[in-house]
Image (cartoon, rainbow, N blue to C red):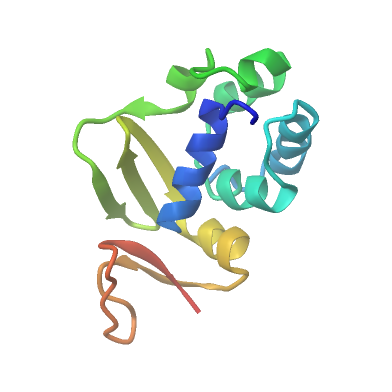
Length: 146
């Protein structure tokens, strides 16, 4: 059985919360790179995970420059550059961004891109526990799509 890399775990975590923007900058190319490195994810899984993430140019540069061994390691060297640490597990909306703290890592997702990449829907403009029509999320604060 293939060793599960940290990147795959991070991708799974982002998918599991279904919330999250690098505005698509180089995401397709990044996913192609990760797949070529044998990270063990499909293009759809990669785009759904990384597409909504807010990643700095420095983070993306480090990910593109990293050798395949780095992408498949338990803790890639770019981890601290790409993600802040956090202590309190959960999710918090701030405008159209959702901050997710999971496993000590803070992932920031752009709600418009969450709806686009993960749901193939439009963002309603609401990031909250309560949806635009009064719906209540069982998962806490989420990006609401329609």
